Image 1 (tube, protein in one colour):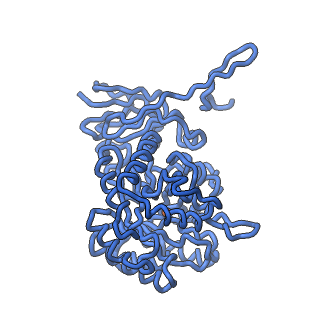
Image 2: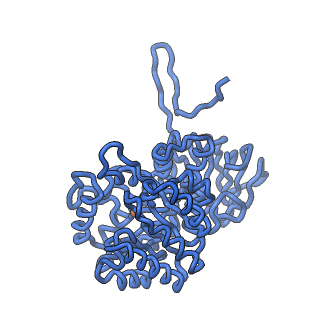
Image 3: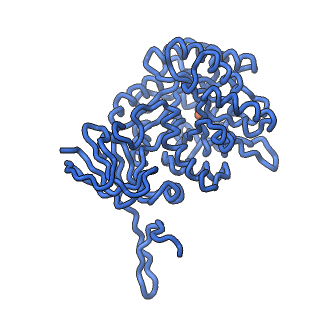
Length: 428
Ligand code: FE2
């Protein structure tokens, strides 16, 4: 007896609806009309069934703290950093955990079951590190959480950060972070990348740096990062987050940079919500958008995934941790409305994210974990258009979140119509 069968699922790369059978937390078979029985059956009725959404870049230590100890009145990055500094002195393990766990309920409800979160290690007590390590452990049955040791105030610039980062890794933080553009000089930025990549090589860990998160067209730490990846053989194991300077770089230089990035197999993580509200703030009109060059990166064969970055924290007052909203915002800010481009946006919040996080057994294939989301939408384009109800969120073959389908009644003078915003028929 199987544990679960999802019937009539619309799965990407299958031309017609298929059944998905699951046992012992794994997918057994995907085919049409499977004759088998399971403890539970769910009829997807031709709707889209996708592997879970992946958030490649988040800050769980600050999330849900909006308004504490005060609001970011101007909405700028710099005031956000001031508020975070004030908040840091109030952090307790209990409070950080409480907020993170609340956020994770939202994430699960939205079908996001893998999250890479940076955690600020520039705190002599490493309170957020301890809190998020406990959260990772308590929630591991439901969510794959990766923690990145993030020296927010600079690896070389902030006193004690070198030791604190090592201590965070000793405690069990998964990934090595950095912030080269925030070091005192370009040379220090370069030195930080070298040291952090060498540390990753020595410890056999992944790397994810906040890289060139600035409007400065000459901030080119990504070039150093690709060089270090080549030198140390870290291909595919390093992520460059934000890369907002790339928006403003000289076009000729970018033609040199893209092949170097492809050769280094660097994973690029774009954070559309935050990049669009934070970058270009010092500009008069026209104001730069400040997002990495996603269409060109994808065309160059470089893996690009998306992150939510912030939800209700000192930098961003909105959000429900919905990765479909991230794809929706990204599509607009990047002007990626071409047919293939919209599809690529869906990949940025699913399989490309899994590649960035180096997740194993991710996807809808026999042998993969039985993790999936059934959406009230027919296909990925409709999913991005509607950001629809996540009808079922399934982890290791068990339903861990369920939402009733949206159904709205419109009452006109002589008829009543049911509306759910999906389009049933193609226009004739
Ligand atoms: Fe970030």
